Amino acid sequence: MTRPATADPDASPARAPDDADLSLMLMIRAFELKLLDLYGRGLLNGTTHTCLGQEYIPVAIEALLDPRDHVFSNHRGHGHYLARFRDPAGLLAEIMGREGAVCAGVGGSQHIRRDRFLSTGVQGESLPVATGVALHLKRAEPGRLACVYVGDGTFGEGAVYEALNIASLWALPLLVVVENNGIAQSTPTSRHLAGSIAGRAAAFGIDHHLVGTSDVAEIRRTLEPLVARVRSRSTPLVVEFVTRRLGPHSKGDDTRPAQAVQALREQDWYARCAAACPGRFRRLDAEARAHIDAVAAEVTARGQSQWEAARWERS
Image (tube, rainbow, N blue to C red; front, top):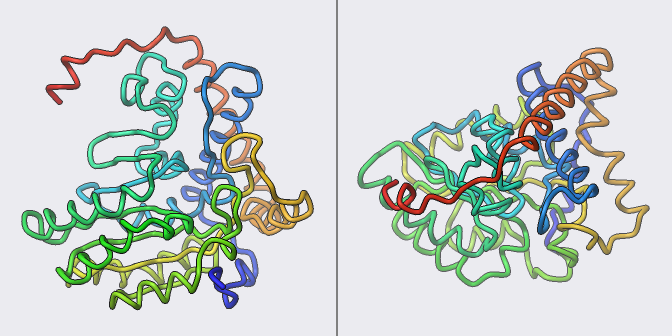
């Protein structure tokens, strides 16, 4: 059994975030829905992986991070990027290959590099790289940490355990955020992962904390001293979120029964917040959707991005 049975997501009474946090969560939701809309109209190439249902995680975590921390994201990383930079136009331009793209349009949806943010579609790669960066930070910038977002499926990668071993052995400031949505691409966690993520962290002597709520304020209140300890004592920490993936893995590859997905939607933070503060929610949701609509219209009208190899080689 790998999905914690003790964590009943959002069993506590609904409580809506403050305006700033709720607006950011709604902006990420609107961005992901707009992407699906653009794909449906044939305006985007390739595929994409949305974070629908998981938006509150980067919103909660980002407030605990410092701009000088390194963040490693994954293929489902739009929310991680938007929570860090509040830059939907740059990200959409990247995905569409338009002028003003974060990486000149060559990274697309999954591979973004900006300042101390890096995403990759190869999740097993992130932990070893983040561990190396954590070693650098410990030596050169004490007090800074490397934060890496992975999914439950990543724990099937052997490189994860080499990284956890070194991070614990060398006492590195590494924050591992596990977004356990109960399914890895099309395989339920119970069918691809033996034991538990907590047990695996314990095997390396690494502290583990389980989060079973989408209450942003509560998450921060609980995690703040734990993240501070990662910085002050330079020790790794695994934080596991029991969360939900509302959309398919990428496009059209959802093997879950419709009833199961509907049950997840009924537990989604979006519905809970809408019920908790209907008037404020409708206003902020409308503002977020209007903002993303305007961004999409403006970015779609831009010219194609031009790759300038010389500029990137200098950066």
